[in-house]
Amino acid sequence: MNCEKIIQSLKHNRYKVSCFETATAAADYIVRSVKNTTVGFGDSLTLEKMNLAQRLSEHNTVLDPAGHVDLDFYEVAVKTLTTDVYITSVNAAAETGELVNIDGAGNRVAGSLYGHKKVYFVFSTNKIEPTLDKAILRARNIAAPQNAKRLNYKTPCAVKGDRCYDCSSPNRICNTLNIYLKNMEDGAGEVIIVNEDLGL
Image (cartoon, rainbow, N blue to C red; front, side, top):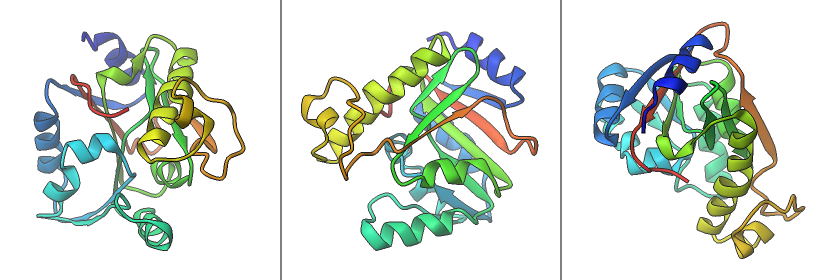
C-alpha cells in the first residue's frame, strides 16, 4: 500500500512518522529507540504479533496487561500509566491524519493521552481508511466486533459478526471512542506504520 498520503497528513498534524515494510523491521526500530527505561503497553493484537513486549524486556522494565484478567489486568494497566514510554495500536487511521481508538476499560486511551515522555502508535496498513468518518465506521463495525468475537464475548456484534449494535451488554468493549486530531502539545506521539496485515 502507498502510505505517502497518510504520512504527509500525520506529519502535518505534528507527528513523527515512520513506515516499514515488515513487522520485524518496525520492531527493530522501536527496540533500537527504547532502552533502559520503563515501558507500558496498551493490550494489542498487533503488538503481540510483533513480539514487542518480549523483545523490549531485554533492556527495559516492561508492563503489559495482555494475558492478565480481572484484578491482575487492572493492577498492571494502572501501572502502565506512569511509565516513561507507552506503546499502543489504533483501531483505525484516516488518510487525512486522524487516529481512532475504541476502548472497553479505557486503559489504552488513558495511557496514550498524557504523562509519558514518548508514546508510540503502531498499526498496520489494513487499518487505514480514506476519511475520518470511514475510520470511525471501521473501528466500530470491523475492529470492535472482531475483537469481541476473539475474546469469546457474548455481545450481539460478536455473535453476529457483522457490525456494532450499540448494545448494553456487560461485555461491551466499545465504551469510549477517542479521536486523535493532532499530536499533543508536548509532541510525545510518534506513529509507526507497518505495510502488513497485523491487527484487527
